[in-house]
Image 1 (cartoon, rainbow, N blue to C red):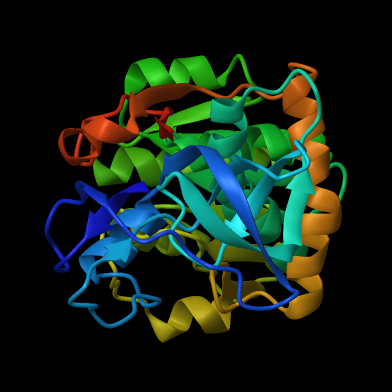
Image 2: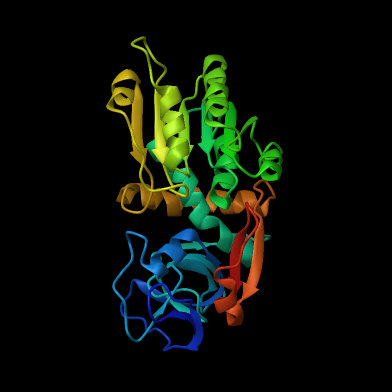
Length: 323
């Protein structure tokens, strides 16, 4: 079969011939793959930078962690891969497989799951969002965070505030659920002043952070209390596009009613992951099929995987490999 293969971490994937995987037990099934999204998670695993990366295989490793495919009986499904999924065939887990609704394209379906997990899991299980709450999304111009804007409103958020550097994309977020925007192109004091003004008028209940780094430091500085009673805030770290480390004053933690947590692989419980596959993803697939979720994609062919791997995709779009 043809596949996207990494022979050494850090190198570009190659379009190559690779041995077709073989079903080993009753919990596995083979699918004919049709579409797979290229996510930051996949790139991090392939480069060895992500904490879930495995050791190198000198015979090569097929990349891709999930995808859309067809079962032998013709059923079209989304599934998590046991073998790499950017290939003509892939082994998948039977208990992590979801039939797709009619009206949803392979490419759109492939683009969604990583983003849904990267936002819905944080909103529902780490932040435990309630109807009527105010959500601040730090770094909202990426694909996953744009899904978070829409899902926050779907889960009942009264107000969604977004930050980012791309002015055009920030304006576009107003059309899909954002209520207020904060440009990160401003100087630090202007950003903090805008955050404080928002906090006085509409106290923030939940912060989803896709950036971390310096912007997280600014957010913590505006949250810092002065010894008075404070509004409870649930802060969830999801990504670190602006840097993996920050300086966090202990006085912030002592002066604010703050819940600080992270959402990602390894932080979710087995029951939460079960709900992702049994409830959350099926609901989001159906919403997208009904055009109630906006999903922006670009597509490339498997044969072009090497030159497409590092392609610059516009803010808010997901690159999908068609097989």
